[in-house]
Amino acid sequence: MSDVSLDKNEDKNKATNQAANLRKAETGPLPRSGHGGEDTMAARVRRKLTSRVASAVAIVIAIVWTIPTFGLFVSSLRPEEDIKTTGWWKFFSNPSLTLENYNEVVFGTSASSGRLASYFINSLVITVPAVVFSVSLAAMAAYALSWLNFRGRDWIFVGVFTLQIVPLQMALIPLLQLLGDYTKWGGGFFAVWFAHTCFGLPLGVFLLHNFMSELPKDLFEAARVDGAGPAMTFRRVVLPLITPALASLTIFQFLWIWNDLLVGLVFTSGPDTRPLTVRLAELAGTRGNDWQRLTSGAFVSMVIPIIVFLSLQRYFVRGLLAGGVKG
Image 1 (cartoon, one colour):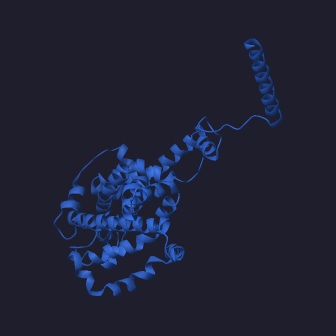
Image 2 (tube, one colour; image 1 turned 30 degrees about the vertical axis):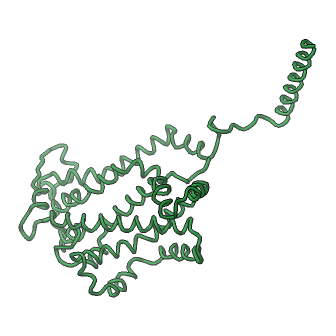
Image 3 (tube, rainbow, N blue to C red; image 1 turned 90 degrees about the vertical axis):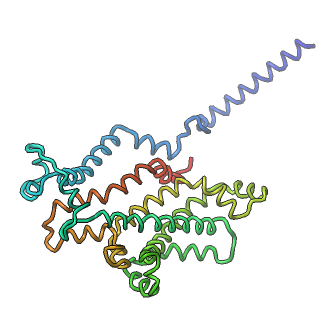
């Protein structure tokens, strides 16, 4: 009996394999799935971007993009006479370096010198709190608009989105009049903190909302079953997952606030609160003759943004790519 049953099982397996081969021949090869190399849009884009041609184009763009910055750096180290008489590329035929330009713009005491040390501190005092306020409020608002159910939620999000259309210049004077005497709060920095936070919230809420809305719904249901409220869910579940998006938004906000001239010029007064960009604009003068101060001052203003970008670079790339293409 056992031999007969084995023969029947073998015949059954052969028939099953033949039927499977017949279906495969009729329908063609099955698409690759899972992690075995599915040929998705993301895979095709990745192959194109990592090809030799794409790499060569990226290198050329990087070189062309870096040349002006490199020329600015070389000029900042050249003596004043060389800067005003020859181009920066002449440095290679007659090299001469000096740190006098940096010493003058950072630690100079005369009225014509930069005296950027105090303005550098002002920029830090303006930028760090403004970034913390805008990113924190944008994260909480995006969470509420993404996962909390309340009446008018969608209309509020539409309103926040449309605020990006309003030109910044149109809101400066009305906002300044609204603040009134509050401009003296926080050592004179409250007004500029408030302005940068208001102007940064629409874009921050929009970006973080798009990121949070892609999070799996099962995570929030599991947290609710475990007894976590909205605040704990945001703190324990959402924040760790949106770290790349927060890093990307932080970089954008930091660069925008640090390099801002208009808001700092309108909402601050006097050397005790003026940011670094205002002082750099003053260094240019009416005729722009002090080139040696401008080049070194520009590089002094670039130090902190470069440090911030390099420290958050890996999160920045992940934040840009997250949720872009599924598959």
